[in-house]
Length: 225
Image (cartoon, rainbow, N blue to C red; front, side):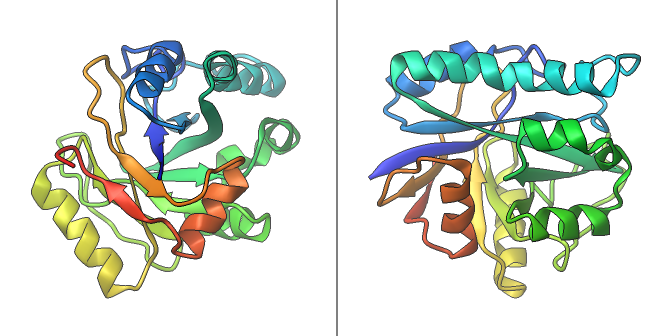
């Protein structure tokens, strides 16, 4: 079996994080993981540390540096590191996979996409939109909103959620027959190791997308497993 965490933030890009990507890469490697996906908060996120007064190219280069530093470390220690990001719409968060740095550099309009545009544009490019922790209830989240027709799947286990919130996410995915995934949403040094297990190794972010969209993941890793 192969282990992957699908939802990780690094302190240099996500201001709500305290752990570097390098620290986390080493920790996940030591914990027996085969790969991780860096999903820092994108430009709508309130904790994104990329200055808005830079040019688009400079902003994207800065944003992607969190992933690139982690990937370099991963290459050195034998851990696969893949790229994604977390986009925010009025308190609701979505994990985006399958669009790379080169694509981002050419598409500044992404910053102004609606939820509908996000789904359709990512979908037609073979990417994936996952609703992250959909039932998280915190003071900074105005209200819980669900978008079953604008996502490819649901994060049904998030280590930063209460058990009841994860349980509701599972029931939501089941009700709408949506593919499911899980991740730690790790920001700090006290890592709760979770994610997914697969029967075959993932060699690219497209492998992960196909795995989830085709419902081929073996199981979600729960902290007590």
